[in-house]
Length: 221
Image (cartoon, one colour):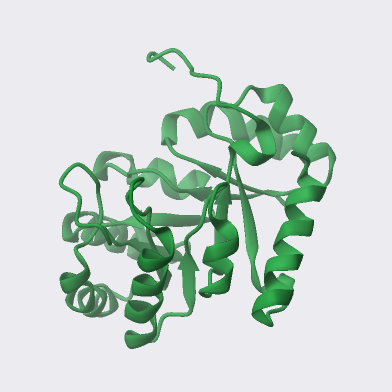
C-alpha cells in the first residue's frame, strides 16, 4: 500500500468522524526497515517517523537528518533509564513514559538541558503482564506526579491486546486522557487506525501498511 493510499484512508476516516485530517499525525514506523525503504518514503516528502530502539535510531537517523530537512522522530518503544540522555539527543517526541523512575530521570535531564520533548504516557489498557505501561487505575496519580516534575505531557499512548476489540481500548484511553486534561492520543496502527481516528486519535503509528513486512535485523544491531 502506498503512502498516498494511507493519506486517503486517513482523510476518509476523518471525514466520517467530522474531523480535520490535519488533526491526525501519521507516524511512519520505520523500525527494522532497510534504509532504502525509509529513503523511498522520505523522497515522497514524509517527515514523521517512529523507532522502537534508541540504538537502532542512532545508527540510522543522523545520516537521514543530514540529507533531509524537517525530520520529526518519535520514540515508540520502551526506554531504559540509562538511555535517556541519548534518547533526548535523538527524538522529538517520546511515547513510552511508563514509570516513576523514568519520569524522574527525564525530569533531571530536562532540568539540566533546559528543554524536554513532548511526552506521552503509555497506558497498559489491557493490563497485560508482559506489556509495559501504567495500569488504567494508576494513570491519574502518575499524571499528577509527572506534572509536579514539570514534565511536558502531551497525551496518552496505548497498544491494545491483539485478541481484543481495539476500539474498546481506544475509548478507554480517550476517557482517561479527557479526565486528565490531555489532548494527545497516540493510538491506532496499520490494522485499526480508522477506528482510532473515530475515537479521537491525534497520532497513529503505521508501519507495515506503508513499508511492507518488517525485515528483522541482527540482534547485535
